[in-house]
Image (cartoon, rainbow, N blue to C red; front, side, top):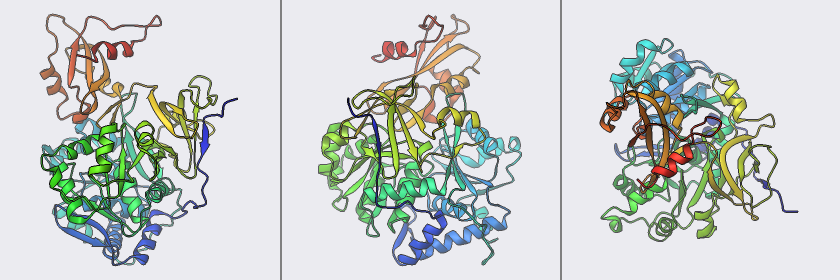
Length: 530
């Protein structure tokens, strides 16, 4: 009989029992004079001693502002040092930081503020075409629990810090307390708030860093967004739990700024989704950058093409680059390639199980574990599984079964050596440039357009982003169909840019199954080559 598709990460390295604040205290005590944080755009730098002191000041200010343990503090901002300070200060006092995607628009941010019950919001002033203050002003009257907004780079930030009271007692905390809510696009119209504890994300960041052999000598370039686990867990927490330095190259991804930061700050590690690495490698002056300080990094979000991986290893000096697989609900990483894995394992699989985590592949219908080599649904269990979706016990029960297994919705195959290949998705999730998009959310939004009678959203192949969003629309009046420009105008400012359909097909009807369900797979296949 073939071995079953089950494996667990046996390890002699024990799980951390700290809160994030206590773990940071250890780093400050061990490496007070080493750099903890560098913001390349502004030139600002923090040693661990200064970073710890600034976290304490902000934590004290939040307590003075009436933020209590368990209160929700929102953060709607691009990457900046203040983002990192808020992450650690809220964890210090047991407040629950609510990450809000900077690409969100009023439709989405209003929902998140109300669903989480955010009482204090930190926000950027603006970035590119986004005027965050104007958008907050639009929704604030419809968010009754929101009592204060603090903007980075604005007098309101200094005013808040001025309220700090040194020596104020902190609440008593447990490592199992919830301290972070991250919204994942929902299949039922709105995002769900994956609720994570100190124990969840501190340990995940720590063990990802362990597998990358991080130490206080490492400097990690983080061009991926902090609002996502990739940035704040695999980046920030992996760094501070090892005394390494977080390097912020730009407020949002910029390939030139990223390579300049690696060169100037002598970074040893670089993060990104494959499209980011492709953009960096394709810079006209790529060969002029000195990237010889790099040794490792993380590539995640979607499969890495073989030729890209070859160039990353050979031309970016990232011989120990790691592929990670995970999801927000699992803090995020469950599977990771190892430093000495060969090219085939780094491009053909998403690695093997992390320490202290269990993984199995089951029949999606019966739940029975499949033999190795056979496809099924990937499930994971362990310290990393979320506490649940915020205030949504029914949706939590749909995702996490009675045995505490998280059902990922991904179809996978476990090889004989324990490495896992992702072969498809049970649900219809679209992955565009590393962003997870659930069609149902977009469909429910588009139903509000007066020209749309019915709509189905699917992902179709795209050379650069992996997938792009196609809207298949049945118009209310066939004589006056919707145009792509009208669709974009309807979505602009209300949906995040990556969710807005880039393609449109006007149809008379949808292909249906005998039971009356739309055959999305047929839509994808039919229009994939358009």
